[in-house]
Amino acid sequence: MTARTVRGVAGATLAAALITGAAACSGPGATGAAADAVVVGIATEPESLSPLLGYGKDGNSKIFDGLLTHDADMKLKPALAEALPEVSADGRTYTYKLRPGVKFSDGAPFSAKDVVFTYRTILDAKTNNASKNELDAIEGVEARGEATVVFTLKYPYAPFAERTVLPIAPEHIAGRQDVNSGDFTTRPVGTGPYVLAGWSKGEKIGFKANPGYWGGEPAVKKFTMAVVKDDDVRATRLRSGELDAAILPPNLAKGFEKDAARRTYAAKTFDYRNVTLPTHHQVTGDVAVRQALDAAVDRTAMVDELLEGAGKPAFGPVPTDSPWFTAGTERRHDLDRAKKILDDAGWKAGDDGIRVKDGVRASFPLWYTSGDKIRQDHALAFASDAKKAGIEVRTEAGTWEVIEPRMKTDAVLAGGGSPADPDFDQYLLLTSSLGGDGFNNMARYDNQTVDAALDEARRSGDPAVRKAAYDTVQRELVKNPGYVFLTHIDHLYVVNDRWEGLTTQVEPHDHGLGSGPWWNVESWKPKAK
Image 1 (cartoon, rainbow, N blue to C red):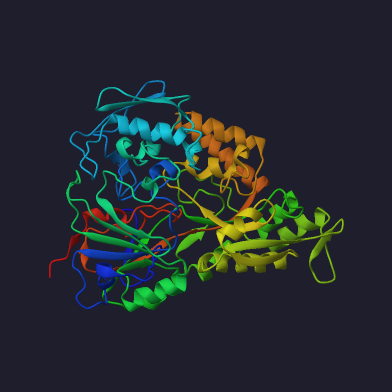
Image 2 (cartoon, rainbow, N blue to C red):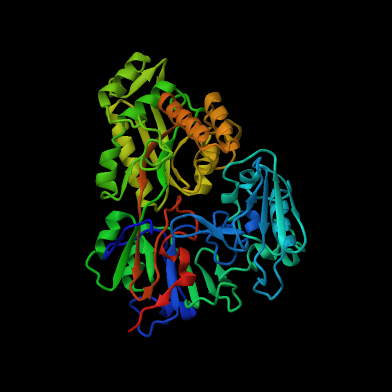
């Protein structure tokens, strides 16, 4: 197990809207709570439940399985494949033997053609999958009989096996519909431990146990993810008994410290918060301003005061306790250095203390998502630190619909992180070719040295070559930070203490539905009374 377990604090990803029917009586404080039902809250909601459009791409999708999955220690293990893949000597061919006897929840048999259909459809130019570039190493995928799938790669992409946790869709259903708008996007069928019971957008997603699941029918028969974006509301509904579990920021989690009926799980993560520094803004595009902000920010204070110690300072996408972290790239809080950098670059303090250069005032907006207390707190703390150096940061709250069109020029309190492989953390975040591609490279960072290092790292199977390349990337971020990384955040989860088998994994940025102690809810068992 990769996370510490604590009793009586509160936790972090999911929360509830109005819960009706059987799910409504399954909260920990409800009279006659269903013994085989669990309700958790989620802060965000997927746009689609189709893996062809990106749902569950990092695993733990509940409705679906991938060829591989992760265990509690984040090591790959077989799922729909019966073993880990056979890899050719040149690293360009991956062969998967499939688990026999698996069926989709509608009773149709699973076979190699479903795997081929899934990957080819995602890679099709007509498919609106924003993450398809994660599979751009694939040259071809083919079925050899009913039980073997062979992937051929354009180059030896080191972490390819990690990409095959991607859920598999049934060709006999999804292949007969419009991939972008068909019923499968909201009424999916998979091979996973649960089937979709219903989805009320903006309110809840309900699942029921799949009696024909190849891994055995789950003991938790009803599993509901209730959608509540606001942290405070999530805490209130957890306290009222509407939820069996929730994820909360540390300052709200404190309210559950003495609750003997609940148990808290703290998961270590790769989940970071950072500030984008858009290259297309005349202030944040200045390298001196970037360097100054990187020095002015007090990361340790953010961990201590905003996270109550549940995290660590962040100096890039890789946590300091990861073997991929580059020693020596830590940046200490140094306000005097920040001021000197700005002085030397010609940014002079005005009468109000805000610096000016060539008639340009050192001022820019910083957006954060409404209702996200952790992002709000980080934004305000960053603005306070920046002002001490003579830079005005104007914080603004909004939905992603408001924020996304402004990302080219406006800074954003963003987040990300993946423990699976450093390529997943860094390529989408930093490579210049993805600048402005949705939420990839939001700052439009453009550094040819970084581009070359990222490309070398993903194409090499030699760990030493990869480590050297990622060292180059992290050192370049010291010289020219396209983002100011603030903290890596531990996730705290409070769960009603009536189930056994709960663990946590090292977790990614918390946009997925499969994180938290319920990553393996299909394995939970009720505690003996």
